[in-house]
Image (cartoon, rainbow, N blue to C red):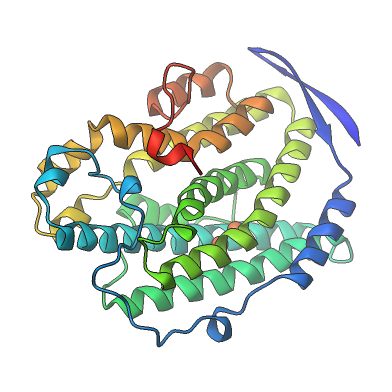
Length: 322
Ligand SMILES: [Fe+2]
Ligand SMILES: [Fe+2]
């Protein structure tokens, strides 16, 4: 283990660096020990229970709002079904972005190194995840929620120009936020068993991806000159700025017969929703702060997202038990 000093507007950060090859070797071994084949390991014929949720109610965008109070159990379950499909649709899009980025990383790297071998292992994991999410969406009978036009078009460029530091930071952001929601989902008995199984498989494999992204990001931060680091850190803050509001989609409300404008505004101004999103972002923003990626200009953008946890903004009590 070595250490690197990262100079920032908020002071110096000491970042501990592990040997990349050793980290990759450990992750490759762990992947060989515990990986899933969703086609074979999931009982796709198991029926969905009309009474059970698709996500824990506390994670839904309208929970603890006047609109929620007026909804019947069936309507709440239907909202959870659409919010999950929206989340999985976003998951597939971000996994495609990640796979393109990882393959560019492999393209530039040494294929005999364990580090690049792990990037390929992770790409294979993500291929299976997207297949699993797609199959589940198909099973519900719903259609995937498409990405907004700018994201769809920008996504075509992923893997062409993204520097590794920005790529791994974006990956970490998406993986940590998804992981937070899936960890509470996989243990919640109010949720469909099939959704819990999918969440469990994804959490188990993503834990390795998060370790890899964290370690790689520390190396990239330590070796990137400060001006370049600041530009990329601001870009990532911009990703956070666009991502947070897009986790709530008006199209979901239209699909469950709510007025999309009223429901969207209700979610956007809901203290519980804001606290839940901050809770989901907390591990990513905490880590980015620790390694000096939220400072100066990027800190100002992050501040506007409302996603930075502070001692004054505790996470929702209903989610802290996890
Ligand atoms: Fe994944
Ligand atoms: Fe992943």
